[in-house]
Image (cartoon, rainbow, N blue to C red; front, side):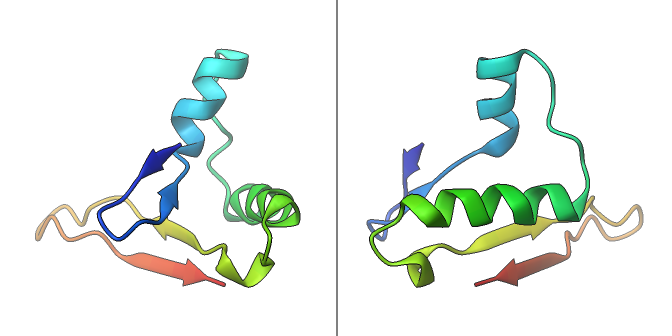
Length: 70
């Protein structure tokens, strides 16, 4: 878990999975949502947990699409 400049915390699920299980997380949206739901269960206020999914960068522009779930 890393702290961000605005005092929030960030969990890198891929790094966490590699550290704990030595395998990458399965890259499926439903898996990330399930992980976020489990993490939110440990939060003081589950509304404080936000899942941010970044897509692969566009080949032409290099821009990543970002989706947020509360």
